[in-house]
Every structure is written in structure tokens, then in C-alpha cells.
Image 1: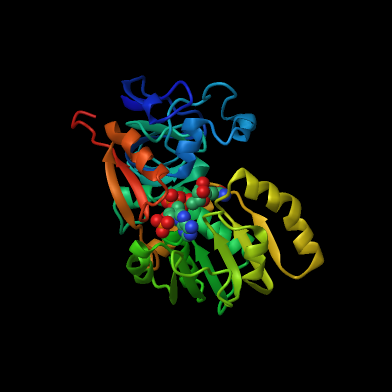
Image 2: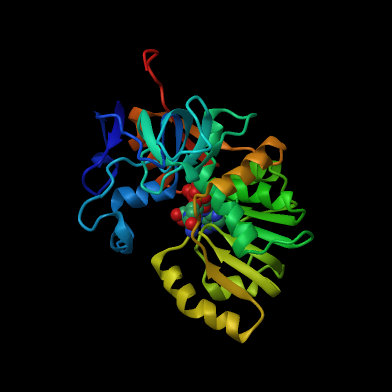
Length: 327
Ligand SMILES: NC(=O)c1ccc[n+]([C@@H]2O[C@H](COP(=O)([O-])OP(=O)(O)OC[C@H]3O[C@@H](n4cnc5c(N)ncnc54)[C@H](OP(=O)(O)O)[C@@H]3O)[C@@H](O)[C@H]2O)c1
């Protein structure tokens, strides 16, 4: 099968299209014929091995442990391991694996990280969902404790996580303000925001407005700025962060929570079949859709990652797998 492989950390130049052996599913895994995959910032972090602390967390100290990128994917079940209970060959699924594998014709994924694809969307729309959609859902619902009627601000509303977060927040019956650059104002408004802030013109931490919940997908503000924009008992969930913001939040976040009623914390999303089903239902109810900025072929993965790494994608970037008819 064809796959994009890499054996050392570095720029997109370390990625190469190669013919390799088709993987064999373990007992609890499903072999998927990948029809589409997507690109997340996670892919360029894995590719570069940066920030360096990720290498200590198991991705490989000097070189990558897993050689195929691509956490998110959607496709058809080709075969299943002997302990797989819910899925069978032919099922159309979406989900992903933390160890990647999606930038290939076939990939093995644990059954509990997959769900049936929403019936009303394409493979590419489904492949756009897992990491970004789950991050938005878990950030708002689990860390953010979102409640109907609240005022919610999404910083970085025009990116992968942000476009899902705006729509998922609206499904909870809240008032949503989205923060993005000038060129994305129209797109972010079209997702149902009640207000849009152009960050090149207005600073949401300085304009006097206060929010019950802030989802920060950018990580470009100090936790003191974020605290200022929260209502009493407000919660800020930091999703995108630099090592500096991470250390600031880890050390000062608990202090802020202990000395007042506001809470600021980091989150780390998990790929679970259960939450993929929650997203499937939101899609099937027409409450959420995937916003796709660009589509690339498997051989163009290096360009796709280069584009996402520039940091201004309008929604999601997806990879389309073209299978020859004999496969
Ligand atoms: N903690 C977790 O579990 C988790 C999971 C997924 C992702 N993440 C992280 O979350 C972040 C966002 O991920 P993503 O997939 O949404 O990335 P993305 O698609 O690249 O989107 C990033 C967005 O940030 C916006 N942005 C850049 N500068 C901004 C500013 N000054 N103010 C407001 N918005 C700004 C960009 O929009 P403009 O063009 O409008 O500037 C872009 O749309 C990344 O850092 C990623 O690593 C964390």
C-alpha cells in the first residue's frame, strides 16, 4: 500500500511517499481502508518532535517511534480483529489513533476509538472531525461545564477546533462570541455566532465584556488577561498553548482557582468512541458541519502540513485517498 512515512524529525522535507506492507489488525483493532484523513497541529508537532517535552512523553527521543502521521481518518472497515464486537467489514467509520497511521491506504485503529460515520456527510467531512471536534466538545462540556444561557467566547474561532467549537457551543443554547482575523469574520458569523471580534481591531480582554466561559484555541494571552475577561465563577479552558503558557497555567492556574471564583486550566482531548457518537448525532441533527478549507492528495501531505503550520487555515485541511479500483 502507499503511505507517507518519516524516519527522522524535521521539516515537511522528511516526509516521503512509499510502498509499504499493509498493516494487520491486532485482536482489538479494525483495519480501515482510509478514504480521507485530516491535518491537525499535532501532525507538525509529531513531525518536528517539538516541543521537545513531547519526546519525553513517548513519541520517540531521537527519532519518531511511529513512522506514519495522520491521527484523524474516515473510511471503510476492511477486516476486524477477533475481539472486535461492534464493527464489521463494510461499515463506514470515522475516528483516529494517537499513534497516527492515517496518511496511508490502510490503517489499524482500536475499535474503541471509532464510531460509525454520520450518515449525511462525506468521508472527507467525517475525517475533518475527530481531534478538532472532540477537543471542542470536551473543552466546552467537560472542562468548561457549559450551561444554557451562558456567554461564551471562542478565541481562534476560524481554525479547526474553533469552527467546531462555535457550532457545538450554539447547540448548548449559549450566546457565542467568536474571535478571528478580518478575512474570517464572514465565515465565523455564518456558523451562528452572536458576535464576532476582529482581533486586529479589538482586544477581547480590554473591551469591558465578560464571559462565563472562554475557550482559548490560540494561547497567545497571559492568564491574567484571560482572567480579566471572565465573569465571577467564569471558566477559561486553554486548548492551544506554547510551553510558556503551559508552565504559567500549570503553576498559576491553581493559585487563581484557590484565591477566587474564576478557574483557568489546560485540557488534553481524548479520542473516544462514545464522544464520536455524540458528534455523529450533532452532525445528523444538522447542528454541526465540517468547514473544509483545502483538500490535498496523499502525495501532497508535505504541502498540506506546511499550509496548516502557517497557522491561518479557514477551518480544516483534509487529505483525500485515491484507491485504485483493484483495491
Ligand atoms: N489540548 C488539546 O487537546 C488540543 C487538541 C487539538 C488542538 N490543540 C491545539 O489547539 C490549537 C488550535 O488547533 P486548531 O486545530 O484549531 O489549529 P488551526 O486550524 O491551525 O487554527 C488556529 C487558528 O488560530 C487563529 N489565530 C492565530 N492567531 C490568532 C490571534 N492572535 N487571535 C485569534 N486567533 C488567532 C488562526 O486564525 P486567523 O487566521 O484568524 O488568525 C487559526 O484559525 C493548536 O495550538 C493545537 O495544537 C490542542
